[in-house]
Length: 465
Ligand SMILES: Cc1cc2nc3c(=O)[nH]c(=O)nc-3n(C[C@H](O)[C@H](O)[C@H](O)COP(=O)(O)OP(=O)(O)OC[C@H]3O[C@@H](n4cnc5c(N)ncnc54)[C@H](O)[C@@H]3O)c2cc1C
Ligand SMILES: NC(=O)c1ccc[n+]([C@@H]2O[C@H](COP(=O)([O-])OP(=O)(O)OC[C@H]3O[C@@H](n4cnc5c(N)ncnc54)[C@H](O)[C@@H]3O)[C@@H](O)[C@H]2O)c1
Image 1: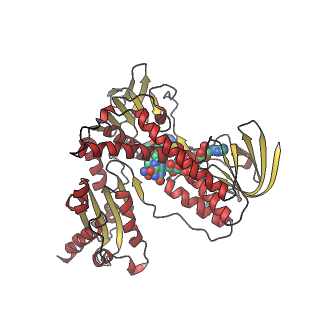
Image 2: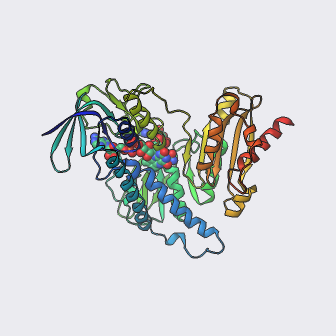
Image 3: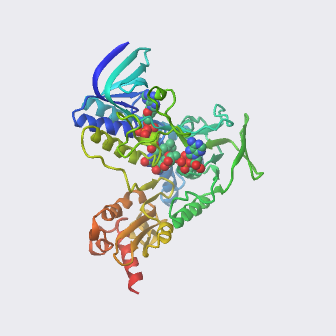
C-alpha cells in the first residue's frame, strides 16, 4: 500500500461541488487531493447529466429553428435526425469540458487519484486505483462530493436494452419512433422536449397533477400547453404498476388500468445519493433512505472534519448550487466565514426554457403579501420578432407599496439568461431593490432584456390606475 500523508483536504468526487471545493482550497494554499472513480474528471454533471442534456437540447433547438425559418425549412427533416449523431456531437462537448476541467487541477497543483475513495477512519481515505494499487491518504479534512445517480426501483429491469435512465439514454443506439417517459420532474420534462423536438411521439407520465408544481402556476401551465402543442401526450396523476420489456418494445401498465406501449422507456423518477460502499459505517455516518447525508450550516456531517456538499446532501441538487456549496465549504475549512447558498434560481431547459427566482404568486397570496404583477409578452418585443422566438413571457412580481421585487418568472427564448438581470436588482439591499430601476434605466434595443422595462411599466400602470 502506498501511504501519503500531510493532506489538508481530500475531496471525493470531481463534479461541480468537488471541483469548486478543490479549487477554492488550493487558492487558500491548502494541500488538496481529489479522488474520482470515473475515467475522466467532471463528475456526473459533465458525463451524464447537465452537460450532455444541454448539448442535446441545443442541437434539437437548432433543428426546430431551421424548420421555422422559411429560408432553411426543408433542409433538415427532424425525423431524419439520428440519436446516435446527436450523441456524437454531445461527446465532443463533454470532451472539451473534461479537458478544461482536468487542466484546472494541473494548474492549481491539486493531485488527482483515479479510483474509488473509501473512508477508513476520520483522517484516512483509501483509494483503490484503476491499476489495482491501493493508496492511503492521511488528511486533516475529508469532503464527500460523490453526487447522485438515477433511482432504480427493484421491479424495473434496467438491464433490458429498451429500458433507459438519464445515464443510459446517452448510449441508446437507435432512434425510437415512440418513447414513454416515466417521471415528469425536471429531467423528464427536459427530455420530453428533446424527443418531441425530433418528431418522436412522447408519452410523458406524471405522478402528480401538474407539471413541475413548484413553479408559478401560469408558467407551469404554459409549459404543459407548449409540450402538448408540440405533440407530447402528458398523463397526469398516474402511477406505474409494471414495466414489461420485450424484443420489440416496452409496455408500461398504470394503476389507472391504462397500458402504454412504445419502442423505449426512459425512467426519470428521482435520484439517490452516492453513499454506498465508501466506508461511511466506519465513521458512524448513516445516510437517509435516498442515500443522502445530513449536514449543518457549515456543511459538516456528524463527524466534525468530514464535510459533504452537492447532490449527496439533497436540496437543491443543482450544478449551479453545487459549485457554490463546494466553494463556500472549502473557504470555511480554510478559516473564512461560512456563506450559505440561498435564493437559488431555477433554470429549466425545456423548450421553451423556464427560469425563475424568488416567490411565486401562490406563495405571496398565501403569505398575504400585497403584490402586483408586471408582464411583458415576448411576441410584442422587437428582438423576439426578429429572431422568430415569439413564445414567452416575463413576469415581475413586486410589492404594491414598497415596489420591492419579490419574484421574477420567465419562460421563452433566453429565459435562463435574462432572469439574472432581475435577480441582480432583487438582491440589492433595502430600497435599492425596486421596480423603478427598470423604469429609469435605458436598455439596449432591440434586446430580450428590454422585457424588464416593458413589464415594469405594465406593473406600475396597474397600481396607478
Ligand atoms: C439529466 C440531468 C440534467 C441536469 N441538468 C441540470 C441543469 O441544467 N442545471 C443544473 O444546475 N443542474 C442540472 N442537473 C443536476 C446536476 O447535474 C447535479 O446537481 C450536479 O451534477 C451535482 O454535482 P455534484 O458535484 O454533487 O456531483 P456529481 O456531478 O454527481 O459528481 C460526483 C462524482 O463523484 C464520483 N464518485 C462517487 N462516489 C465516488 C467514490 N466513492 N470515489 C470516487 N469518486 C466517486 C462520481 O463518479 C462522480 O463523478 C442535471 C442532472 C441530470 C441528471
Ligand atoms: N435544469 C435543471 O436545473 C435540472 C435539470 C435536470 C435535473 N435537475 C435536478 O436533478 C434532480 C432530479 O430530477 P428528477 O427529474 O429526477 O426529479 P425529481 O427530483 O422531481 O423527482 C421525480 C419524482 O421522483 C421521486 N423521487 C425522487 N427521488 C426518489 C428516490 N430516491 N426514491 C423514490 N422516489 C424518488 C420524487 O418524489 C418525484 O415524484 C432534481 O433535483 C433537479 O433539480 C435539474
